Image (tube, rainbow, N blue to C red; front, side, top):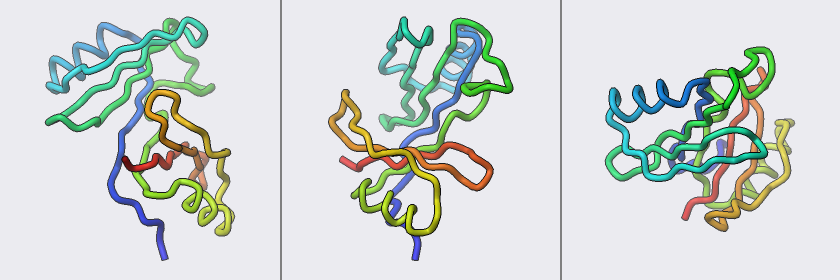
Length: 130
């Protein structure tokens, strides 16, 4: 029996150039930039892009070109799935031997989330449905 995944929440992509990222995702693809944040500690921009009013893509844009051998690297950072109960889903994954991180709270939305990893180590996320 699989997890009770309702839909995909968002995809996070790490980019190395702010201007090129905005040009491609906003102007070329037509996604709408709804929110932008800059983290001085992480030296990166975070952009939230929407399609038809739905949150779709999160961009992390590093100030310096990322090292492709060290995360975060250019490309997919994580894939996020909406679930009703993050803690139960994490317990279900653990019972199947899947590596998971602790459940955390999104300070902006107040919703729970947790990262887990596929067999190749690709980072995936469970995010609490609202």
